[in-house]
Image (cartoon, rainbow, N blue to C red):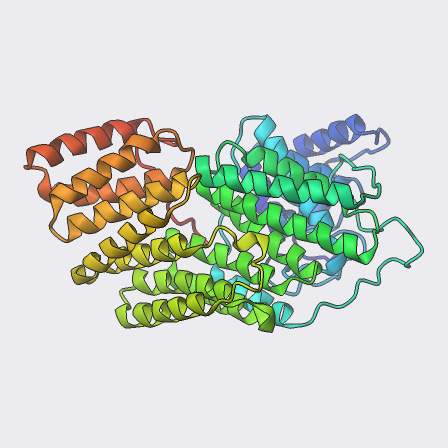
Length: 494
C-alpha cells in the first residue's frame, strides 16, 4: 500500500458508476468463474485499492481490467487502472508507463488484444478513451528509442518457457513454433495488408487483432533467437496493421495503442526502422485529427529512432508525413522543402536492396498521392497550391496498381477538392462522382471524412445545376456513411 489514492482507478470507478460493494461482488463473481472461488473481496478492500493505493493480488488486476472494459465499452488495461504487476518498478517512469520494460511487451500485447476482442464479441467499440498527446509520447520514449536494446536476460537460456507475467485470464498454452509456422504467419500479414488496401480497415480488423493475440501467446515461449526475432517482426507488422485499421474506422485511442505496441515489438526484434515507421503512423493519425504540431513531435521521434539502417525510401515516406503536418499549419516553405527532400530520397533508392515487407505499399503512386494531399491541404491557406495538388493527384491515379481501391478514392477526392479550390467546378464534379461511385463498397471511415471535407467546398457552387445535383448525391451518400452523416473524427481531449 502506498498510502496515496490511486487516481486512475478512482477515475475509472467514477466513470463506471458502481458502488464499492457492487464492484466487490463483481470481482468475486468473475474470479470464481475463472477458477478462483476462494477470493473474498469486500467493500473495505475496494476502498483500500482506491483510497490507499493498495495493489490487489493476482488475479484481481486482470479481473478488474476485464470488468471495466466490459462496463465502459473500450479497452481498459491494468496500466489504465494504475495497478502494477508483480516485479514492476514501484514508480512509473513516464506517461502511461512508457516505455515498457522488455519482458512486458508480449504481456501487454496479449492483454490489450484480448480486451479488444472481448469488446468486438459484445458489439462495443473501443473509441471512448482520450489520446495521449504526441509531445508526451515523444518525451517519454525519446531516450528509449535512441538506445540500443539490451539483451533479454530475464530467463535462463536453458529454460524453454518465458516467464513473462500473465496477460488476461485466457492463458495461451505456450508451445514452440517452427519455420513453416512463421512463414505462414508472414504470408497472412500480406493477405491482411492487401485486403486493407482494397476494402478498408473495417472488415478484417477483428481477424488481424485475433491473429496478433495468437502471436502474443507464441511469444510466451522462449524460441531460438532467429525465430524469436521473426515472431517479433510478425507482431510488429500485425500491430501496425491493427492500428491502421482501427484508425481507418475511427477508433483513435485504440489505434494509438496498437502503434505503440508495434513500435515496442519492432524494437524487441531489433528492427529500428520498423519502430520508427510505426511511430510515423501515430503522427499521421495526429495530422488527420487536426493536431499537426504533435505530429511533428512524433516525426522527430521516428527520425531519431530509425538510425543508420533506414533505407532512402523509408526516409522519403517519413518526409511526406512531415510535409503534410507543415501544410496543415500553412507552412508552405517548410512543406515544399520537405517534399523536395522526399523526392530526392525516393529517386536515390537503389533497387539492389530489397524493401522490407512493410514498405511495399509505399511506391511512386503513394509518393505522388501524399504530395497531392500536402498541396491540397496547403491550398486551404494558399489557393495557388491547388494546381500542384491536381498534378500530383493525376500522377498518382495514373500509377495506382490494381487492388489499391481505397487510395484511388482518396486520390479522386483530393483531385476534386483541388479543382474546387482552383475554381474548376466542372473537373471537380467529374472526380467527385468517380469517388462516389466506389466509396460505398469501402469500409474506411476516413474516406467518408474526406468526402465530408470536400462537400464543404461545394457550397460556393451550389447555384450551379450540376454541383447542386452533386451536393444532393453527396448528402444522400453521407446519410448512409458508417457512423452517421458527419464522419469527421474529432480530436479527443488529452
